[in-house]
Length: 83
Figure 1 (cartoon, rainbow, N blue to C red):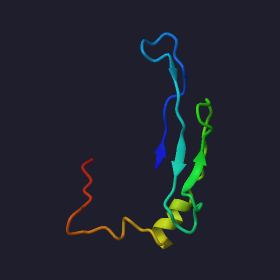
Figure 2 (cartoon, helix red, strand yellow; figure 1 turned 180 degrees about the vertical axis):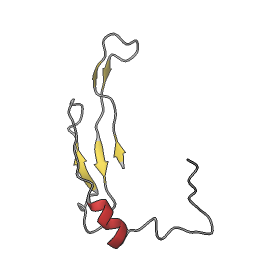
Figure 3 (cartoon, rainbow, N blue to C red; figure 1 turned 30 degrees about the horizontal axis):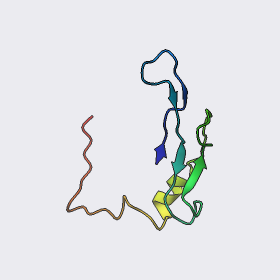
Figure 4 (cartoon, rainbow, N blue to C red; figure 1 turned 60 degrees about the vertical axis):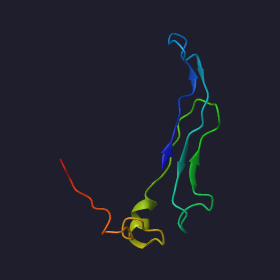
């Protein structure tokens, strides 16, 4: 999960003068990931780019202990492509 907000100054936009936020990339709470489930975290109220490596998610879907996709209840939910 990735959360982000807008940080900085927009002087020419009404009601959006100064904005404060903090961005972060969260991971599942599993063995391959950090114990606090935070892959990357930006400095609060600072304009910056946040980069995180999400390659471990592929391995988690195959061999992890938290496998939401495989453990879902098929009697209640289904996936259907509409494209």
